[in-house]
Amino acid sequence: MGKEGILVVISGFAGAGKGTVVRGLMEKYDDYVLSVSMTTRAPRPGEIDGVSYFFVDKKKFEDTIDAGGLLEYANYCGNYYGTPRDYVEKQLKAGKNVILEIEIQGAMQIRRIHPAALLLFITPPSAETLKARLEGRGTETAEVIKKRMDRSAAEAEEMEKYDYIIVNDTVEQAVSDAHAVIEAAHASPRCNAELIRRIREDLRRMAVPEGG
Ligand code: 5GP
Image 1 (cartoon, rainbow, N blue to C red):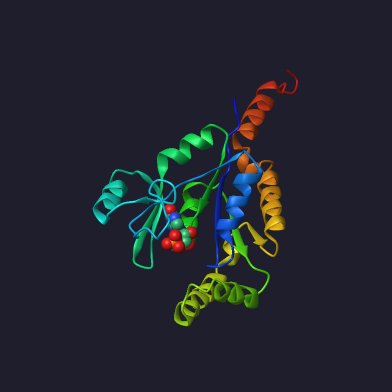
Image 2: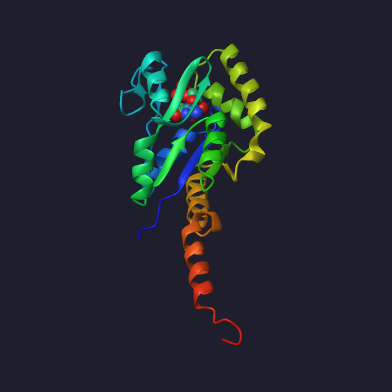
């Protein structure tokens, strides 16, 4: 029987470089696929429907929830975001590691319904670096930067809920650290539940009863 892939959740502060780390994993290794989320947020310039997100209206999103089509979903800053279920389940069965780049409410839902999932939190080495990166983008107003920094302060309270913290100082190191952690997770008991069950059962069956 083929081995199932690992469901890898990647969260982190705005400006921590989640997207860059995810792209690095996809480019460097071929055992990852990325789940494309569904959202009611409007596309930004350059975003492509079906690649960046599946862009839908509120009615379609709510119909998909009702039909059980989403693995998890959350409302973030006034818009819905959710993970289509079918793609994730198929890819995991095919042995691929599936990456979900999602925020924390969604990450906690995944933890409950998929206990073997691996939750990674990406952070820059310091708060100063985070601020400098947000300012360096040059695309956001001081007010937006302040909002994102405030949100990061709130998110920092939840970091212990993740399995591993990946420090994104240099992208190359962060990508290789994330990959190492995911590789190691394949050896964890929670990712080997079926093997453990089978060996236990066989050993019990093979045990010769005393005096027998
Ligand atoms: P953005 O609008 O900047 O693309 O995404 C906003 C936030 O929503 C990010 O933190 C992103 O990781 C998160 N997000 C994207 N897709 C999903 C999803 O399918 N589920 C959840 N829970 N969060 C998502």
